[in-house]
Image (cartoon, rainbow over all chains, first blue to last red; front, side, top):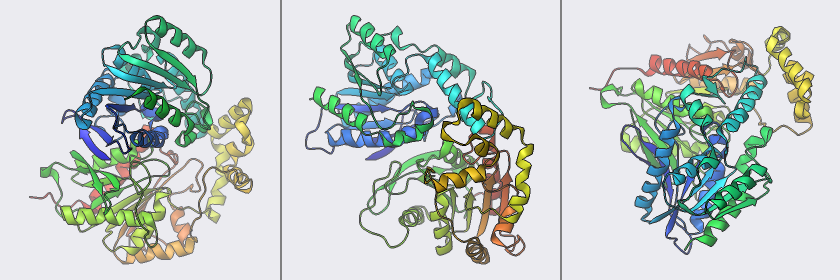
Length: 260
Length: 292
């Protein structure tokens, strides 16, 4: 395991490279894309577990903090979707350079899935693209975060909602809000991926529609429902996201089946 | 400010981020500030509060290291067995690294909520600790707390939450209790063994004697308490809890109470005030002079 900073020295990003530790070494590395800052902390442990599973399956794995989150440089309130898309491309290149692999697969969760898909649709070549509980509509995603925000503010005895300048406990700029409102997964098919996997914990009609739309666009896409004991989307039990196991095993299995 | 990611410890198992001021701003002889996990959060802390604290301190000339204890966050488990508290052993590994590689002789560990367990054990045992910050540490309901407790009925936000919970069906909570009587709600949860997270606390008077011994050694302490549904509802409650006054402790122990903030510092403005309190305290006591 190697923690390091990468990217421009004025705005370094934090990354953690897990070298392959299994018997076989794969020729593709796996880039893990965390959810957005509001869901980052509750998913950190699950991402660590997933990185360990993939590493033991022979993959070099890089997980990294988006600009303005975790240990990366920048303020959460000032971060923009365009910068995060640059992060995906930069981190993918860093993984290829650090692990000396030619090909990269991406696993993204929630907003991280939407950003990974957009990066691949914009030209990033990917072996496998795994979209785990992906955000499909930026507007719907913001509405979910706003509902959680109202609940938290009330639970913690604060006046609320806090207005447009904050969301989910973090500063939140108008520009970032506008960026996210414009996110629409169906708008562009991620044709740069050889295979696309959609993972969710229940049958979601919108994912089934997306599967059809992307398949019609020539993308090899599979929609899988994997029920886990925890879910980041299940309201009050969000802290239980640390306990994800079943879906992590499914993701590892799918990536292992497809990769050399 | 510059940051470096590091592997620390005999087994290189601890992952940390060293945050240093610009060389021209570095304060000569200042202690290094140590930050680690809060509950299930990794080293960045809830709402990234420890990343922000580290960067604020660097702007003031202080070096800090935020890290994950063994087996949590990004850190790998420790190999072998240690005597006593393993988290204390991890913190001492980090102190040894900073002493050997960077020449630090004094340290200021800052711990939040459950992190105070290891921090307090470390502070009691290790004379290299020049100061320490306890954020939402142990708290006991004193007679004064109960005298002030009825004032919650004057809080419109509690009535609003009670009404809202009734409308929402309250998700298994007792809406009257959680909104207007959090102490009863907590007791009910504990008796049902349904509480998500609870931990034991030391005896308050024993804790007070330990604080007195730490202060007598010359180590400074800052206690931060917040309002909300916690067990503290007054800035002076620490002295009631431990049976000692500020002057009993030679002025070495200070309290910052923010009744508007909640336990997890959800709102950015609340975090900003807490950060300012910690940075101001560190500057006041350890500011010294800039290294030449």
